[in-house]
Image (cartoon, rainbow, N blue to C red):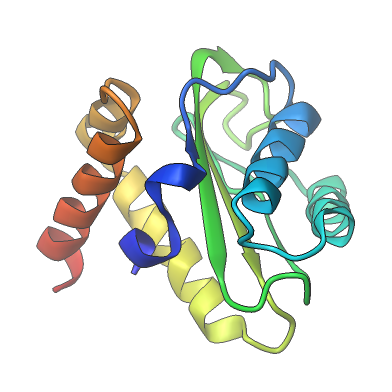
Length: 154
């Protein structure tokens, strides 16, 4: 499923941004450029508003900023990998290197929650996180994710 909502064109490595809000904006811009969303502003606003309530830095060097907006016709994702860990105000106070961005339409909570759960499960594995960080490019990242999903969920 993550392999379906993510594409090699929505994986940024390395992220150019050096702070939390800029990283979120860079990932939203990528979804906009690749026509995965049809209006950038409400998506960015929804995610930043969600982030203002509570950081989505979930620990273990991973953040999962997410939000709902009808600018997304279906659940879409982008993944950014930083060269240097950056502060995301994470629950474990550790910097992040993997930033998953999820955007789904209002009224479709099921797929959104399922994707959050899958990301959390996959990212819990330190070896797998390191494999993704060390990947040679977006194609490899996507292949690793698909292989890992088959192992875990099929």
